[in-house]
Image 1 (cartoon, rainbow, N blue to C red):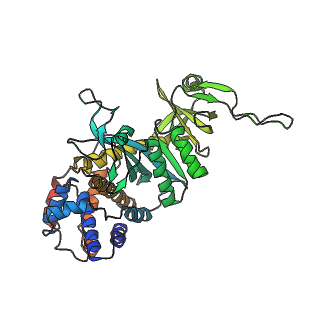
Image 2 (cartoon, rainbow, N blue to C red):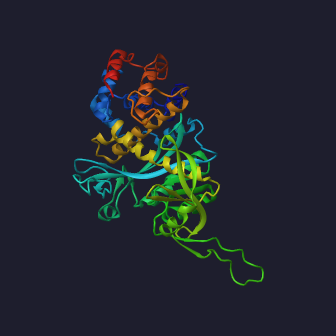
Image 3 (cartoon, rainbow, N blue to C red):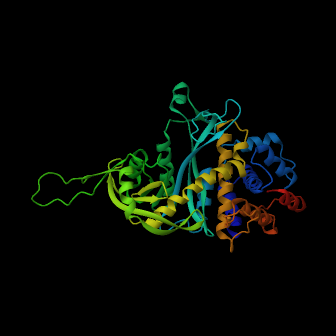
Length: 443
């Protein structure tokens, strides 16, 4: 809890040193705490009720609070920088493992910022293939916490189609936004992560992001400080490494060796040569069959290590530009990529960011920043715990704790007397009797 108290104290210093800035810092901290408390959703109206009935901010009117939630005076760059600085040991084997993906957030209502008809490849038969939704491109830090992988949200961008910019200007307050595709948005976030952490980055992404559209601009900006781990499509051509050029040979050196074949064709050939590896995958120690080979890819114009992972009837082909990774690390890190999908569920359903009714551009952006920061604070608290949180709801085959378990423990710790010293002007002590009763009711 000492790290969280230290973080909240830093948050206070990030705001302007004025009467209004002091007031905003108080409201900001208690808004974050209201999101963390598990029996409230992240809707602005629910947060206001929590401030009224739990923390005693009865003087805050709905108009003042909604104005604060849409304020341009919240210094998000400084706040995220303060949060990043308190993350204990963010690297894994001297590198940052960053998960990259996008998700859609369905909405109801018109004139909502960044809402358009987006294609949903995961839609069920009874759902629309083109829901009215926001498309969020997010980057999160993958870290093993108390024996399980977790994804800590760091940065995000709202993707808006190019045709929307051709129809009219899109503004964020007074600032005019320019069109950028998802790959360019991803590169901007990776550059920002490198500037904040100043460490080499291993990007773990699916095949949609794992291509030259993201790799080339990222490599041009970060050079050798960035590597990628992704999945290969079955129709990608593989080439052998070029043979060394003799001194008497004329012309420039060859970049590629002979043609090996397509990924699917070589998967059948290499299956008989696969070896068994013990890997920590999806929360369990598993034995998998895999075969690895170093080849050249013309799609990204780089030397890569390809690992074919075999099941009974299927295979998965993974590749990475970081040749120092072992086969076990390649399989485990790509398996941990799924935690960004779990992170989207935690953010949208458990935290409740999908239930917001904000429409203004600044309000929508602020609200998602609030929710992501609250999620990251919960994982930071889990990292500093001395022992694993106890799992409240036992699930067959799952021995590790859940996100909701850490959230409950952090709520109890926040309601301790130590938290009262963070904010010098606390209106009245928290209603611990109400909180205890609601924690029993909350899932």
